[in-house]
Image (tube, rainbow, N blue to C red; front, top):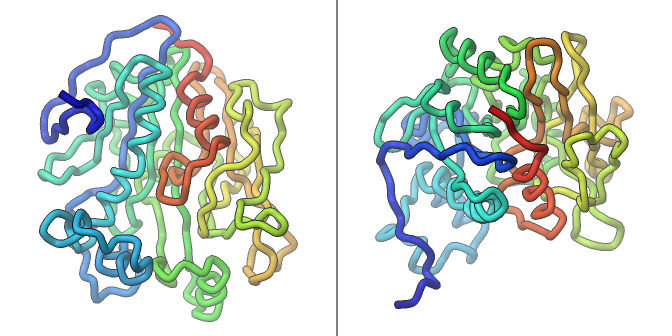
Length: 342
């Protein structure tokens, strides 16, 4: 029997805990959205929602015009776009599983079946690296609870843990329509509205942990001269004690990436990489004199917190915008980060 189709697919079952293996990390992805809230947004609303699959097909025509993307097999509303996100991380999950010997666990704050899964011991007990993909809109009102905060703080006291925070962009956060239009023309993505603000849960978690980082803007990376490739990163490899940038020259091209603004606050934040910005189309951030944005940062262990905190956008773990060898090297580095202990 051929195995080219991969393993059988399962859904809507309890998580099976992974045993600790010395030196091998167990990765878990946590989507911060309520699937129900996001999937049922009114398509008539212009702002602060994901595109429907119908809109995706229209803008990217004829990319999704084959039968497997039709209504008989794939959702055509917002739910279809959410499923594209899920499918886009499968290559990362496979590579991470090969590196670690453990499957990547995937959780949602509220899943397709309506079950709410907070970040608690059921997730954290067998997780060494937790990737928090901040793609809940501010309007969903998701907030970290006191119980969750206590569980995360206790988990971070365990040596070798890593909390990877990936709050997405904040496009059009102003009431000034002219600025919203400037931002829209800068990134040039017809599927992103004039205002799309992420992530209420991620921001509440960062505030509760006294993490002095703020996700702001949605900036279009510059292209490498004469090509369609993303411009190389400006790296600070002497600060990269985790080895995240080993054999990494660039991350994924995505038209609206967040700037991780470092604010005054508790604990040092080391910016490990900055991304050059597209200069041909104006943006308030470049008008203020900026030519690069912070795209990878790290907070080393500090005091009672023995775990690392890393900041990088969730886009860089997907294949929606391509996955070069450099991006795959980044995945490998995240999966093989310095050893764990119990």
